[in-house]
Image (cartoon, rainbow, N blue to C red; front, side):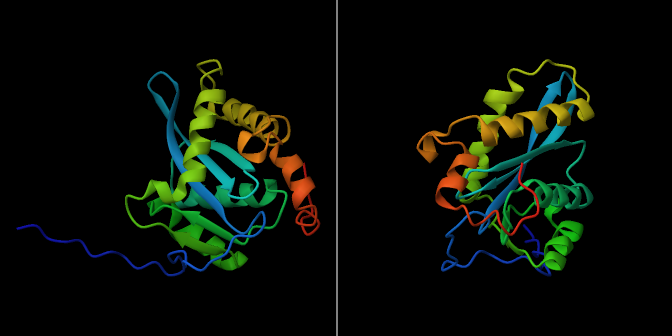
Amino acid sequence: MKVKKRRQRRPYAIRKPKDYTIREPGDLVQVDTLDVHPLDGCMVKHCTTRDVISRWDVVEAQHRATAGTAAEFLDTILARMPFREKAIQVDGGSEYRAGFEEGCQQLGLKLFVLPPHSPKLNGRVERAHRTHLEEFYAVIPKGAQIDKLNIDLYKWERIYNQVRPHQALDYLTPAEYINKYYPDVTSNKSHVY
């Protein structure tokens, strides 16, 4: 006899309402982690955040995917996105509970959690993972420690957002796209690259 596990209720995260509208950068950013093997026998958690409108990405590598490291990554997201985030969408991973969920609540960010086994609903960030694997991890030298890896990821993030044209954005960079179509969204943020 198979016993069904009861799902644990989340105190703050909800499913994204069908009528939730996304009009400008920051209205919805997708966050996900990916296991990457930059060293033989060593695995890191590659964290990606992608804005669904502008395709602006924030990337970072961590040793583990825990609620604590995800909460730290939330600080990184807030510091490196050039606009104010309004909602974050995550899968049901345990790293997006506890400290991450509390951080979103304290900051007034809506937190949407996906149903189990539905990566297609987080398609933009899943596609970003593929790009980072093909264009960053495939060309970096093997053997980098995580601190060096994060320095290189930060440089890659800047290239990705400010230099590399995106076909989905009519061959503009995310920075150019934001400046052309949404110039006012960066005015309420204290920093822009």
